[in-house]
Length: 353
Ligand code: SF4
Image 1 (tube, rainbow, N blue to C red):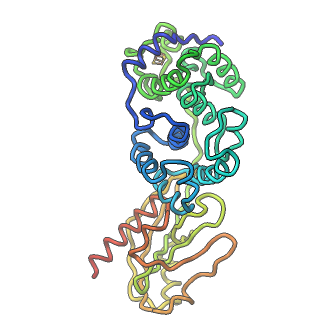
Image 2: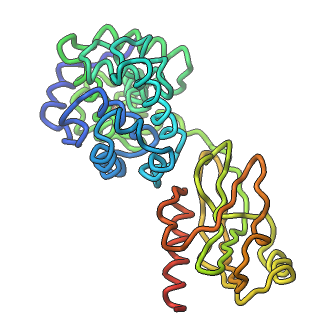
Image 3: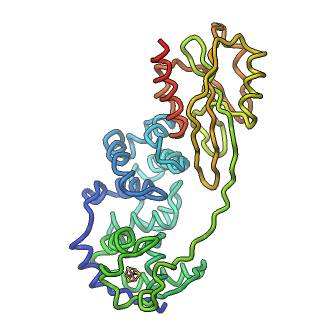
C-alpha cells in the first residue's frame, strides 16, 4: 500500500480532539456492540438519545432477551434500517443460549452471532477487548484513498487496506486507533470538502499534494425508484386500521394500508363501499428508504360503522391488519414517516372533537 499514515500525529490529534460520546465512556462489549450497530448508516448526533434510552431500558443482554420484538423495534423507531434491531434481538437469544450471555472474545465466535459482520466483530475485539483488529468503514476507506490519491476503490483494495492497517495499529491502543481513524474521518477528512488546513497528517497526503482531495472518492449516482402511494387512514369508533408487514423490508413494523393509485379514484371507490361520514387529505410526505422514494398522500376516511369486521381487509401471507384504539397507537412500532402521519391525525382529531 502506498498510503503512509502518521500514526503518532493521528494519536496526538485524537488525544487532543476526541469527542466525548456516551459509548466512549464505559466501553463494555455490550455497549460497544450496540453503539457500533446503531452508528452504521446513522450519524452520531442522531444515535446519542437512542443509545442512552436503549442502555437505560436494556442495560444488558439478558434484559434484551426478555424484551419482545415489538418493544425492541419501538426503541429503534426513527433510526431506520430496522433489520439491525431485529438482528440484535435475535443475537440476544443466541448469546444467552450459546455464550453464557456474553459477547465472545474471538473473531470466529463473534461472526457466528446474528448481525455481527466483519466490521462489528473487529470493533468489539479492538475497542472492548483491546485486541489488535483494525476496522475498515467508510471513514477509514476514504482517508486511505485520499492518502494514496486513488480515485477508484475495488474490493481487493479493502484486503490491501486491512493488511496495511494490521501492520500499523498500535499494540497498546488498538481501540483508540480505530476510534481515532473514525473520528478523524468524521471531523477532518470528511466527505465532500475535507478540512485539510487542520489536518495533522497533511504532509503524507497525495490527494492534498495533487489538489484533488475533494474529488475523492468519486461520487456514485444512485438510481432512486420513485412511487406515489395513497395512505388510507380508516377511522371508525375511535380506532384506526393498522397493517403489519409479515416479511421483507419493514417486517414486524406496523404501517398503514397503502394503494398505488390516484387518491381521487380510490376515494370514489371507498365512498361506494363504505358509509362515509367524511374524508380529509393530510400533509403529503416523502418516505426515503434504501434506494426508494415514496410520495405518500394520506387520506383520512371516517365512518360511523361500529361493526368493523367487514371493513378489515383480509390478512394474507404478506400482511396482518388490526383496528387499534387511537390512544394505543404509540405502542405499535412504525417507520418514522408513518408516525408523523399518525401524529398529524391525532392532532387533527383533537381539533374536530
Ligand atoms: Fe484528508 Fe485533507 Fe488530511 Fe488528506 S490532507 S488526509 S484529504 S484531511
